[in-house]
Length: 107
Length: 226
Image (cartoon, rainbow over all chains, first blue to last red; front, side):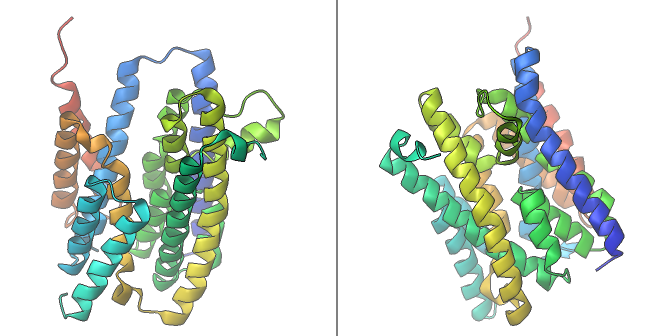
């Protein structure tokens, strides 16, 4: 691990900032009227960030391609989620697909 | 909190319990992956309690393990967690009048799952009960899973054989699938994913996701003229 002091600083920054987001929403709601369009835009930003996160963590490792087994598992999970399968089924099916593919020698 | 069990239907309680079980399981993979990436047990343990937001914690671990600066990793995590601000704007008051600790704890247990369950309920008492039941359940299950996962991870070592690395993207995908039933969101999400993938070979970890935010622009192009 890198310099532990820096990791602690990062960890505390993330914790404090996340709490601030959680705390400020309800407080702001009572004080100001938020335009619905701003809410929509923030929602879109969250979906885009998370979609980008799915793409990078599902398909890449470091700066390169992660292999086929992982995205195949994610795809199976995605299809199940689309068909409204329970959360646990989605997660386990994704891991199981990837594990079985790797067992069969798929990278 | 005893009133939670009288307020919520049995079906809702079962769904909340299943969601918490899933969180516990993802916590297992999170702890195992963190330890496999070279972090000591206290890092996932402290994060799981203090941050209590899975996606940002995975992101933090991933960026720092890939050689990124922890403060840059925190910034990327904060951007992912910025969604908690609109959650608070979208929900009616979940804590109600009461002591300050209730408000502080009520804020801390705001997460994707507790918000989704609260929004799905019809009236305010049920919304509050679902929010607290799910929020407190996640507060227990996420750290418990992370610590156990870290302990298991330090024993088994090779977590990729179990497909644990596919769990996290699958979890995030499952979380955004409901939003993806809207065509505008699909276009923005796909654009963002393509931008992030195209940037990954060239940019340090964490930045491709931030660059992907440009895709938000696709959602404001087709607004009706006043």
